[in-house]
Image 1 (tube, rainbow, N blue to C red):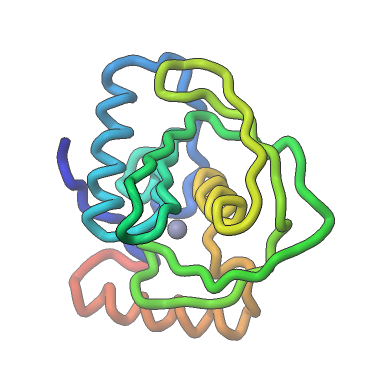
Image 2 (cartoon, rainbow, N blue to C red; image 1 turned 30 degrees about the vertical axis):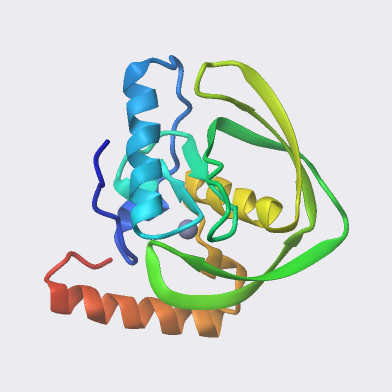
Length: 174
Ligand SMILES: [Zn+2]
């Protein structure tokens, strides 16, 4: 397993729409393992493949608390098939937008259909932090970031800050 470098705002790669995975083979499982290792190292509770520059519909999650036994989850081609009307608010962050947090309102409960790492069709009913985290990561597969759910004023501010920081790093800016 390899820890991969993370793509950071405002890299335009984060705005790419990821494509479905057709064959679940050892390469895909290796990618999932690398993503889990990268996520645990960061540390984070979720990571989409596009955040390490791979535009495929694959994400990993582990929403267990520190000290609890790890419970890594792998979602391939995840699709939200139900969203509840009631909403919940969580303070979200993102490994691609380090050290920035903001409250985001999303449906409190969702049902997601996906393929597991063996290519088996699965369905999960999620609520609480897992529902929020899944929606955050599925957004990444569609080129959407959590800052797209906050006010334009706040979003412009954070994009400006990260664009300035990217220039200092010598990275390409949008
Ligand atoms: Zn994120």
